[in-house]
Length: 494
Image (cartoon, rainbow, N blue to C red; front, side, top):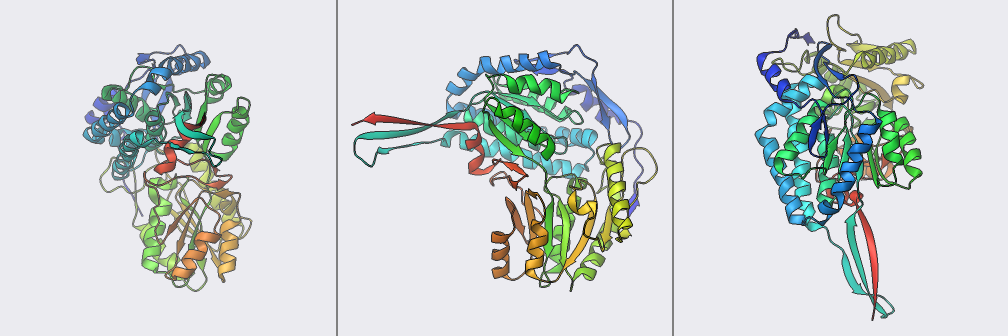
């Protein structure tokens, strides 16, 4: 694999864009400066600070909730068509500004520009999809079985929402939560990840430009997530909590949300199996593996974590994958030809090194990669490991990085057992040309989503979410808007 030299100083275009990104808290339609020391946002490709922004404290969080509560009734009463048109304008503005958003994501998160552009497309689709769903909120009306009255079932906004987004997809995770909330008639307070808050701040300005009224969307970056979040979640005026992140943090938030019986949506950790049967089209399987493993530098909850390959094709699969991985180019995501950017920080690099060391210590072999290159930034070589032994940390933990670890199986039952041998159940991938087997795997693998002969499943029109300890609820699809609606039944006597 090739390592492309990184740029050590921001180019003029980058500096101009960063200067246009708001650096304050967005509360009640106004940009405000906090009283705490600012958050320093780094470029993970260089480790250098690229912007300093306001840092919310607990009082700022409550003021943001105040603003959301104050705007809630008027926004809920806003005609669905008006809400839809605002979201559609936001979609159109995002297309106009897509180059800015793509570059900004690359600067603060590290992903290659081509992938950042893909995220703009994906994230934008949630705005378009839910602009269309806003006018399709419906109920039902009919006589009850006894004939003694008329039943009216209606939908109404759940109320003010607190949305906590992760660092790995800073635009798409914001649009996937904000768009259905606004479409349903809810107001929101958004807490972006400390590591990548710039995209959300830039998006908040876009929403204001699209006509979102003051107080409907509020954004509070903070370096002390727990102390800011706890008072908001404990406030009885809050009615919904949505979180994307790790399962341990999700468990803690669920316990807090339980005190006020909040509606919750939890998109938590994953440990995705990637099962390749002996009859699979290996070229498609390798293509799927590259997508499922190395998209976003492996930093995705949907990333394939455990490659479970039939013993008859395991060597050939590993050989082909290794050839493809060795052709990847590592470097700053803004540089031409780069296909693998940096990890998010030095802790992520240390985690990759520890996983490889543990696997090798238990008997695994590294076919390519396995180390962190010297130089600035938080890079780790794309890695292929085979002969991974049971009990290895790399099979138990969510990798969240560019390591492809291969184990083998003999029978379908063994494959299913291996795929399900985890507390997680977000997504799975299965490659087979046997349609009956494919259907069996859909039924037998315990995940909320599955890619059958594909390594990419996410789509704004599809329900995204998992089972077991991968979370609760669904984002996207027809189901997504109902996470922000409550059902009301009324009986009218005959």
